[in-house]
Length: 364
Image 1 (cartoon, rainbow, N blue to C red):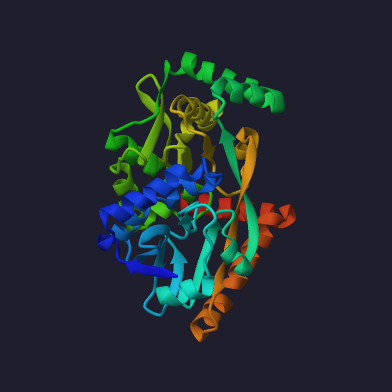
Image 2: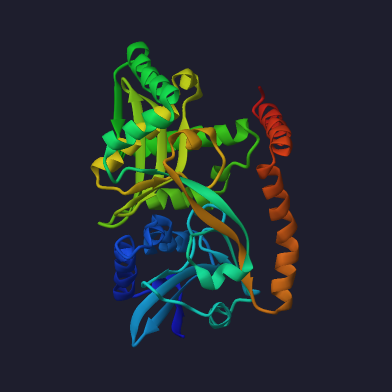
């Protein structure tokens, strides 16, 4: 393979344009998963401004870029997918039909191991190291919002009827319901992060916004806007009061859902569900193909989805002591977590315990 590895500031404008062009062509080429905004140069560059060790491998054919792989590298040569832990789509962005040798790629990047937790489909050279595949529900809106709503009524009539009724009741009780698909007020972003932090603490989960680099990343992406990419803040208002909000990333054809939250004072109106329906309506009007709700078992995702994609986790390795040590440390943690999530008899007691811890932590 003819390839070079760059630091974020070294990527040329021509290479960045070629990367974007591959994403724009992905849907027509039968690889819509490569159009996900988490696979964009904008996301990789934003992570590079917030985290060390970010690199971008550019693979060329006859001097022209054929594939791009962003990753993070430790001083010991341990590689992680870009934004591992917060990114919902990972992998190589490449031209149709392109194949690569995973071992050669690792060697050229100076890596002994490369770890993924949301590897998108059809990355065959990486398949040998995968340890599990997981559903990532999506909402298809390429046929328009009325078609999606009709499908939703057919598959979940009570859910749809109840959610729409709660939206009307919210308008009567609190104030006229107003939705802003692309809210540019930074104060609204701060409100969303405050709600999400409180939700993490309340449910006993690790608070992502307690990590300064994630806060910086979200703020950077909020201010990143190109023709093919943007950080998108969507807000549901009742009267002049924000009730629910979501921050995600959009490409030309995919809206990647990321951080949804709502004011728990208005929980009885299911504002998060109302927000997602409004997001789907606005995304359809913007000619978006689908909303990717992200990996993870949630009742609201099951109710809203039209189908599921698959994302994978695991690692590709070279025979190296560092790689073996990394896998020995990480594999048991991943296996335990996946076993708990997959088995209701384990997940439900663990979830109750986390919520109990969250109530104690919140002083409730």
